[in-house]
Length: 256
Ligand code: GLY
Image (spheres, rainbow, N blue to C red):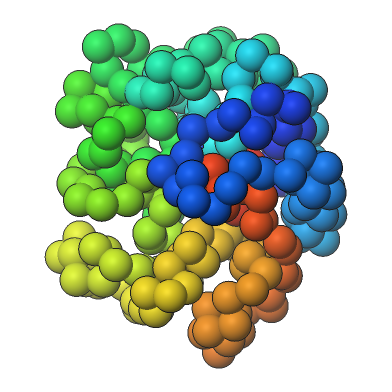
């Protein structure tokens, strides 16, 4: 169960965030703010306390807080984001993490290691880590070393096409995993009950489980149906403006 969620209000500079999909256009800032508020309401319906951080104009992508830290039941890990324009977001997250964790429960990924939290998928006490353009071999080595020192485990998943691991695969508890594209046949995930997302709805592979409910992006009816059929209560929330920056539901919060 999650008790807490950390989010960061989008800055006006959001419109200049990194994107691999410029053809979708720039986000509408006003609409992005509305969607962020709805996202927070959806989280509150799941029974978590939401800590909302102030916008950071210097970091256009800083509302995607998931990349700046990874929180496990044994420690919090401040990452070292591989995207140069995002690297400073990790240290901006540290004061907030310190409000929840004592110093001896806070770890750091250090250069030359890089790691972004979007590449980390928690399945109980095991953490799958995507090796991506943002998360490198040394970052994964450090991350798994930290996990193992604390009685947890991790394993690397090489990525071929997606930005982050959780762009294409997400665990929604009870052995159920949403998989799309390159993750459908990966041996790493063979033991799970795979819910295969059709290509045209691949964006919605990025759903989040929060205390028994699953938050699904608005506008993906097949994924919504598949998640309901798997037995979950679904909460829909629109993330169209974040999609324009390759961002999804998981990217917008730290849940712990
Ligand atoms: N725009 C989100 C990212 O590229 O990290």
